[in-house]
Length: 203
Image 1 (tube, rainbow, N blue to C red):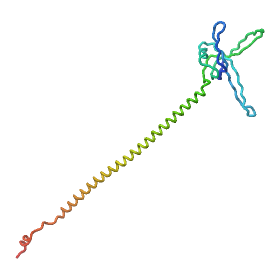
Image 2 (image 1 turned 135 degrees about the vertical axis):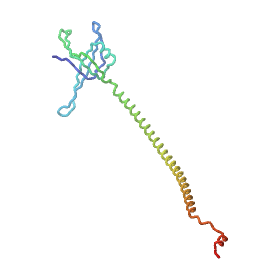
Image 3 (image 1 turned 60 degrees about the vertical axis):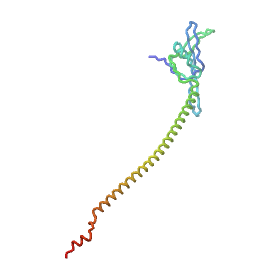
Image 4 (image 1 turned 45 degrees about the vertical axis):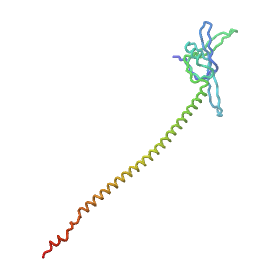
């Protein structure tokens, strides 16, 4: 079993080049930089950049490269290694190893950092506006609730006064009724005239 597969994530060093071969076949070429970072024994930060030459033969991918990719873009590339051999003008053999690209994904463009800051500012403005509007609404609700509570207390006092007045009226009427009853129960005998008293005296 043999596997020839390459995966790269890096940035384009320059704008892609689209050209045609002698037989009229279109081809796209671009280079990707990958940077490795580490610290040495002394703790000093080190980095090393490798450049990878990529070639695209698929017509659909060539259109994508031509339309969307430019210098500085970060891309995800899958492909395979291919080494080409030819002779130079002096008759010496030359070799070139390239990555034949089979798929490309655009991760981010060079101007994404500035755009993201603008979007963050817009979101911050929206958040501040929404917070202030929520605070205003809460203030209005508090004022409304305080006003309604005062009105409810005033209404309660009025109702309490009415109930108190009605209860006093009822109690006074009951007291009058009781006094009438007590007065009726203890009514004195009707007075009799002196003539009646004389008739009752025996001679």
